[in-house]
Every structure is written in structure tokens, then in C-alpha cells.
Length: 148
Ligand SMILES: CC(C)(COP(=O)(O)OP(=O)(O)OC[C@H]1O[C@@H](n2cnc3c(N)ncnc32)[C@H](O)[C@@H]1OP(=O)(O)O)[C@@H](O)C(=O)NCCC(=O)NCCS
Image 1 (cartoon, protein in one colour):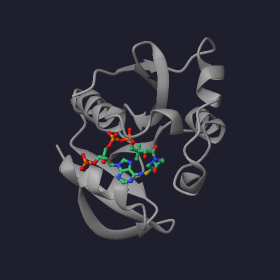
Image 2 (image 1 turned 90 degrees about the horizontal axis):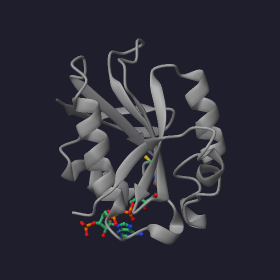
Image 3 (image 1 turned 135 degrees about the vertical axis):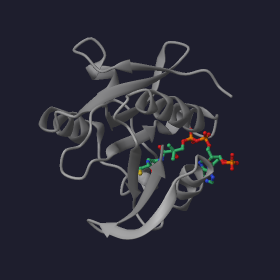
């Protein structure tokens, strides 16, 4: 598996994060990183991370590091790999690392994620990590859970 690191987004690497984009056809699958950084400020349980490969930021993730109080889940809110770095194994490696980090929190017993219904690539990837579709839809998105 590819080696990646997760590093918190700070004033030092924020600009690099804002430059990352998915492919054009994927823009409806994930909010812009500008929007995600705003959400990070509004949601105190979640923290924004750059996904790094050999010291280059190749992607971005926003996920809970505390229980989301409304439902008792740890949510992965945003997850993307920049168009230049896709299909190199970074997405899979990053998801593995995100889950490892989330599971290390003692209160993390349930991880939740959602995606646009026809995003079949990410649906397949999430299921490979043990996520199961719940049958629920939230804001028009397919919901998957991973019991820890
Ligand atoms: C989903 C995403 C993070 C995957 O990142 P990635 O670095 O390309 O993924 P990987 O290289 O680790 O590949 C993971 C799997 O997805 C498959 N895959 C990735 N991109 C694909 C594509 N465009 N078409 C078909 N399969 C694709 C790979 O073949 C691999 O599957 P396999 O191991 O079964 O062959 C990336 O495509 C992305 O950022 N998409 C836009 C944002 C998005 O949809 N985020 C999810 C929001 S819920």
C-alpha cells in the first residue's frame, strides 16, 4: 500500500489545500475545499487534514475526532484526491489512515459516511473497508456505516 501522511490544515498549508480539485465530472460528488474549510470552522467535532504523499499535498479530508453529538457517530465529512494524483492508490491509503486515526479514539464505535448515489467508485472503495449501506438517505446522499 502507498505511504501517505495526514497533516492538519493550518495557516501554513491552507493555500495549498485550496488549490486542490477533483476532476470536472466529480465536482458534484464533493464540495470545494474552500467550502469544506468553512464547514470545519462551523463543526467543532471535525478537523481538516491534508493528505500527503512524499511531502506533497495530494488530497484533503475532513472528519470527526470527537463524537458528533446529534447522532453519536464519528463522520467522515469530506474526502477527495486532487485530479493530478488520482488512481495511484492514494485514496485507498488515505482512507485506511483516516479510519486508523478515528478508531484510535476510545469513544469511536460507529463511523458514518455518505456519498452522491451514483458515485459508484467511492461506494465500492468504502465497502472494501467494511462500510455497509444503511438504506437511509440524508440530504439525498446514500449513507454507509462502519461498526468499530
Ligand atoms: C474517490 C477518490 C477519493 C479515489 O481516490 P484515488 O486516489 O483515485 O483512489 P485509488 O487510486 O486508491 O483507487 C481506489 C479504487 O478506486 C478505483 N478508481 C479510482 N478512480 C476511478 C475511476 N475514475 N474510475 C474507475 N475506478 C476508479 C481504483 O481502480 C481502485 O479500485 P480497485 O482497487 O478495486 O481497482 C477520488 O476519485 C476522488 O477524489 N473523487 C472525487 C471526490 C469524491 O468522490 N469524494 C468522495 C465523496 S463521498
